[in-house]
Length: 267
Image (cartoon, rainbow, N blue to C red; front, side):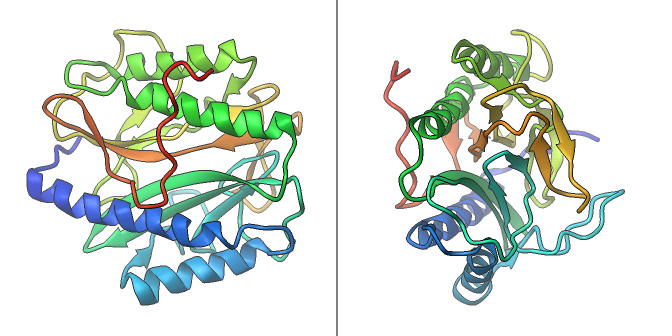
């Protein structure tokens, strides 16, 4: 499978889809508090995507080879859940951390983004994990420009993360995206500088590191989707969709409520 290079018109379509995905997270932010269920968050997101945005929630009934169709419109991964958590009727508790992952299809284009939310107060350790995972994602994003290789991005994320005493999940990675949910290339969040594909203008892919407070080993639950840390340590993830431009990068999944990039040298 080859990497699809997006035209300027393609990028315009992806910019709209990306903004819409981010606006779903903006809308949900006020609702993420103790007592709400992830099922309710899913219903709110579904209604907003379908009725307000006139778009399609990409995860709903998504079924890659070997998987049963995903039953919800967003993914909600709580505490030691790494990714692909399925919304359910369990109320969120004070101190939980939750990743909400949204992918919207608008006019055939996919916009894919996720954020971490701390429910209520949250411990210092949980907040630190979420904050440093956000910075790890940005350490990768700022590397993006023509001529850089994917290994340079992975290396930047890995070295920063491991310096903080955290570990990078290796079984899941970022991915190309466009008219398909998952395209080439795979974007590893670890690696060696100067290796893997060279970036060229028009490439679009996600950067979405999954960072564990403990060891990097994971396992899949019986629902066939939810991934958890083997040692039950907390896990965090952030995700943006990024376009390679002639001179650098453009983040396509930004909206009015997007958190600003971290301050340089914040960690």
